[in-house]
Image 1 (tube, rainbow over the protein chains, first blue to last red):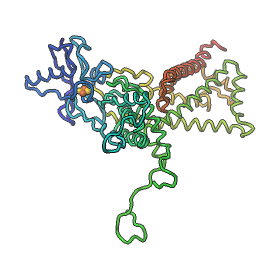
Image 2: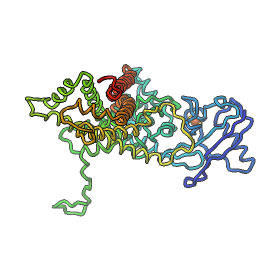
Image 3: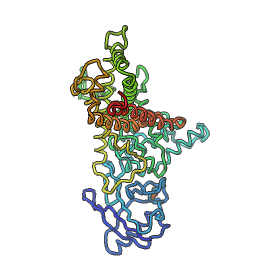
Image 4: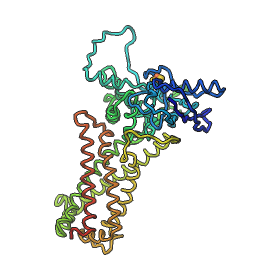
Length: 254
Length: 245
Ligand code: FES
């Protein structure tokens, strides 16, 4: 098949940037969307032009590196799929495909389609961990967890941190990412000691960088891991409860 | 650095400042603002429903609605003096309205800052619907409408021949002007769209999420928005077209 690509090119963070049109022939329907870009880049290199910079690593939907706004949708037309696992058979032969980087104040463009997502690291640093004893791992069955709870925590833990939720949100909010990173710990017994400080610290950090949720549900619709906005509700509940919680003991000074 | 009296050395003392009061730190958070918007939204929803139930009495006739209006002033008597409970409710309502609007404005500004550069290619929305994407517009329409509505039927400033206490007469006088009736209908459709998203969205903001009843949150919002819009649109529509005398 043959496609026309309308790709955002931007030389550097402060460059204005613009769309460039490229024709790519001999595209196999079995190629992934990133392989299409490999073909395009080979063409560009042969012509002596600068290849398109884009993020990728695992190419199997687990690392969260790939990040493209394809035809106005984060990760393209197939739901529950990261860009690297999107196949060209999802597009018509001769289609024109527009590709843009994620756009958010907290995700500055580095070059072409590559954005800096380190604001996500700031959120995780603020509380996305548990206090664990060092030394040898203890017996796994020491702490019993109901099956439903571990399933829910696993669903939240499926987040690969790609940033599609922020990219898709009309408000540029990072609610789904933050909720997933909080709730996969807050749901489990191991996450309880820091439960209330975690939600406060991570949410407050999130709000330094991102917008606020108005419940459009766009994030859930584009999430390659199909993480539910139910976790956002749980985060909201934990946040408000933490605000009203007396975490200091009576008589204790702050 | 604060020196404590009696210190022998220049050892640095703690410079920790007193934390801001709870309400201040609480309100700083966007999630708390959304929570307050949900609480104030519930108060406003309750008001809108009570307001509709009361005003539908216009179809029962002059005496019924005027008597209802008088009862509102007597509410709480004899425990409370005349009109005191009514004023209490008005103050709570005004407070809820102000919080709802101020928080919405601040959150909108925060969201603008979060994406200063819009996408250059058209977006393809999957889940965001018309109602959720027009909340700010429908909200502003409702605000402007409420101001006009108060001038029309509460203060009577823009009502031809306003008569205090004669609700029936004032409503008829207002809706006999066709453009006014159309404005009422348009504004109430906007209110319905606003409620359609808000009455669902508030559950998420409050953290009320349970697989057992999640589907009902949507049904509730649809039913509430539908009932309020039907009633509110029916009043000007029926009076203006003269179907009902
Ligand atoms: S490249 Fe790793 S998730 Fe797409």
